[in-house]
Image (cartoon, rainbow over all chains, first blue to last red; front, side):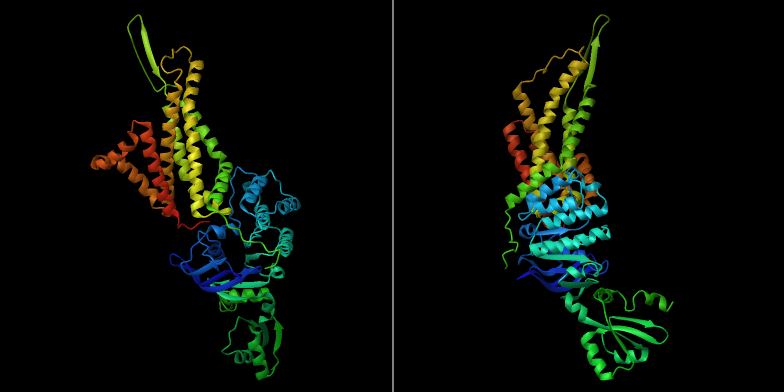
Length: 300
Length: 250
């Protein structure tokens, strides 16, 4: 069963096209990483799924219903980000008690244990927490709510490296105990790669790739060799990334299946073949310009 | 589906509104503290007396000071208007949508909250009139307090009822204004202009507005006033809900 399905989803804000013609589905009980650079449309997409924003065109279904302004979707979904607001007069423990009233599957035991572990003070107020502590608290709410659809929009903002690691570990452990559909957005893959099953790449409001993480590792391959050889070989191919190495060598990243055919056809001609790390590939696939930041300086 | 799967919940609107209402009462206690502050301020201003006049000749001078709790009630009106506008703002909205909510449940729980605020505001504003008399008796004891020192309970109850009704109406208007501003920031300019225009100019040109005003404010029978105010309030709230039902949040 698909928990989320989008058909030709487009979202515009005035003249800005935040999401362009996106079609995808996300299956039940999978952990998906929504990866993309800043301004790719990650938050917009997640807020449409959460029912906060309305799609400009196209169809969105969450639990087979239109999520916008939908109480059923709201009750079965939690959206965690660093913009979460709580009443200023409530202490953290009072906020937990309120959350427990709203979410049927709320696990107070888990919330309390995480609370202790991260040494949060139950009598503290949310607006007095530091950025990282706020994120930690929000994360606890997100986990303890045990919602069939749990959305974390850049959840680790401000967390230090240790807490980030703990968070991902806690997420994975709790997911294994109570499987649910989880989406985590991040502009970097490397941190979350280990806990993800699927990856959804978004850039410039368009879907670039949606694939199991295991496939992503096999998706592309890098070639290095003399520039003219490489250029001839890869003519007409989709090149994900290209940079010059030394005086007359270049380094390109192309699809693995394309590369295999090419290599067989052309012989090796002194080319070196490398695997491409998944997080590097994500950066290549979502970067604005081929050649990366170097292209700004190369012909300067 | 495996056994450990989390099952989908089917929320009811009423249940959600109830939870949100309780959450809001707890979370917005500060607004009631503000009300107390405003009423105490009204009380302090009232201590100097609403009006005073005196007369006499060489042998005898009579001075009359009138005290009234009107100011406290006016301050409470102002308070509930500000509260009604305030809870439509993005910040308060975000708090709603942190947990389970849709537009309708958010509005209905806000309406519940404002009704509660009107009742509490109405009762305290009227009773602070009694408090005012007691304070004046003790600190300005040389005055002879003649009329209305001990008010008939029936009068107090009627006063409370009327104050609550006005507070309901004002809160509904405030909420409506707030919703309009959420729809478009243009209303921040239009609404005050419209208000000044209506009071000052339009009322002279368009007798309809005077009629509407008299229809509601000029009612002498409590029962009729209640019916008129409640229907008007309900209509304004309904408009607010319909207008804001398609708003995007968070």
